[in-house]
Amino acid sequence: MIDETTPPRVDSEVGPLRAVLLHRPGNELKRLTPRNNDQLLFDSIPWVDRAQEEHDAFAEVLRGRGVEVLLLADALRTALSDTRAHAAGVHAAVDERRLGVDLADSLRSHLSSVSPEVLAEALMAGMTFEELPAAEGVSLVRLMNHPNDFAVDPLPNLLFTRDSSAWIGDRVAVSSLTMPARVRETAVLDLIYAYHPWFRHASRAYGAHSAPIEGGDVMLLSPGVLAIGVGERTTAAGAESLARSVFADGIAHTVLAVPIEQTRATMHLDTVCTMVAADAVVMYPLSRDSLTAFTMRPTDDGSMKVEGPAPFLTAAAEAMGIDRLRVIDTGLDPVTAEREQWDDGNNTLALAPGVVVGYERNVETNARLEEAGIEVLAITGSELGSGRGGPRCMSCPIRRESI
Image (cartoon, rainbow, N blue to C red; front, side):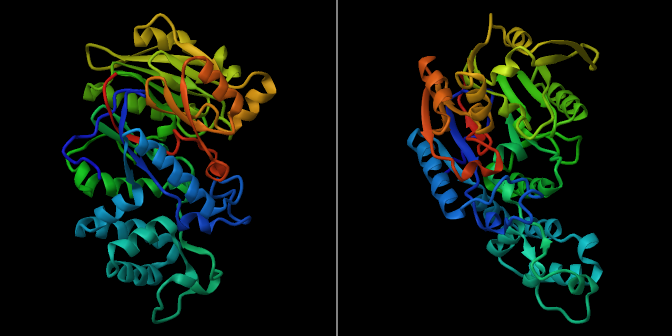
């Protein structure tokens, strides 16, 4: 049971994790087919029952280390029990531009009368034209779409809760997601953060209608120091906008904008490196020397100065006030490193300084972490990883203790 008396707060990547938002795979994954999986950003069709088993085991590992787990579906159903949230949820589900006026009105009327549980399922798993309620009159839109086409798109990427929101200090940044398949996820997170009792006093550090930024690109290197990847999903405008926001709110004093390659393998900064201790990262070797950073800091007159680019590791250590960042390489050789980077070897979730969760298949990377004094809690991810995301991607920390 989530402790609602302690407010959310996250000041680092590695402070002892106390509460986290996860999403257990659901019927939205059963909507994936060979015809639509590319469009919905999955590399293969997951075996959903096994994915659920793997996710349940992941959640139990966290609970076994004293972490309270809030499941997104439960949080959404709780939020939708508020009549205002229910109305907003109906609005988020119905796209009049896609359905046309008459069909949209019919679906809106239907969803307005359903329970929070049914509405939550529609928001997460979507609806096909065949599943729409019967309506009077003729709809050209209904006639010209196949019964199994989506009238409301499913959201299979809800699994990756870190991408759609991230906590910075005592504020939450709701992502402005780039890919069309994920845009509606932010409406779901907006409902949870606005209407779930645990978040009723939470302030926003960023909004979903701002320039593109995704939580997988946001890394809290230390209290007051953020790194933001700029690449396939997060734009330079998004990084600058978030920097200005956190400076204005007084929750950060330095933000590093880190250009990353715009490819599927490196879609977010956390596919290249993640923190495993207060002074250490696990990093893809090819990025060690090539990764750079632009350093942004606020000025006394309320504007912002930008310096760089400089080597990322140098700029990060300077901003964090340490001599250097220790680097633990993915893999042992270039081929293994490339394979394990693709399999999310860099995408670890820290439960405390020096304790991380990682996929068991990344044998060499996990061995290198252990050799460096990092405890690795290995989990199975053969099905969970089909959407290209590891333990960090699947976790939105809500509360961490200070280091």
